[in-house]
Image (cartoon, rainbow, N blue to C red; front, side):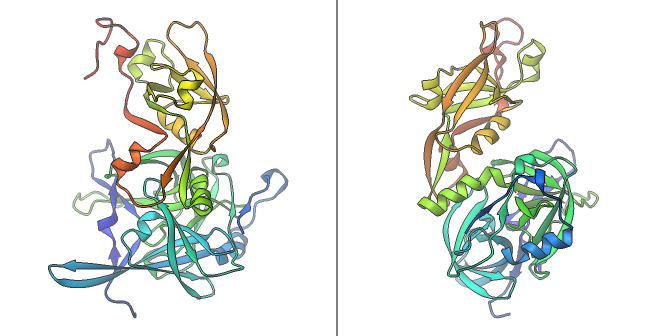
Length: 397
């Protein structure tokens, strides 16, 4: 039994020691043989005891086992991998991580009552690390979806999953250590995740992360671990989960249409550098390009605009804007607060989000980035965008 390092991903870090972000999934080498609910307002409810959260929801959690066949120079080997998931609807739709079922030949879903079902892949979004499965079952207990945007640092959260692929339906508990934690994988994709100190181990991938109201607010998918060759001290209690608000629309569209429907704004964006901010330029999402005939162009957004707020929610970075719009639906109307050079006051620009369709199947990271609503620049806005050369900084390299 060992952690599936072949599906691990690394995290960008300024620290000198080598860290690896492990997609939490257990691997066992060998042959085989061994109706959706939504949360009500929390204002009129009281938090549950952890034991009640578990008792009320363990039947909505599932274990997932996959098999993979590999041919090494004419020798065929089989491997079994284990992950977690949860019941999304009573008629057999299951949600898990994409990396749990990636490259698998067969998938089996096991419920808490020890019933096993063969599963088919309805669709997946590799960039969001989400997969939707379907099993032939009825009257299952689905989870209740919560509001991940309402999470605060210090809130208690609980994870149900199958650590190590053997300790099935285990409960772990911790607090929210950070929200919107930007994590960049070695593949080049990045995600804004919930950070928690609840124990998350290999085999927990795809399992539900609950709040104390028994609502799913995240999908566990990764943890920090030390590179075995680095000689660094052990790292514990740094786990991550995908905020449910980021992927709810994706899951619903896969189930309803068989493809992914995403909200579309139509801009390329980057962060505003600290250098620019020192000259009085506000922080926000700097518009690097506006796509032709896009909702952004029709609304009047221009290159070099800086989006500082959406619907009165402050935008501090390009990632903030991506997260906000990703949680919206096509057709939603947004009010953008925009800084534009030469204007004495912020502009209010009203935009109606368009719809972008993406096939719900595996594709490369590059292919997915080309189809995103945003081209989210990893760098910062060029000082030359705001200060004519040779004023100040000139052009960035």
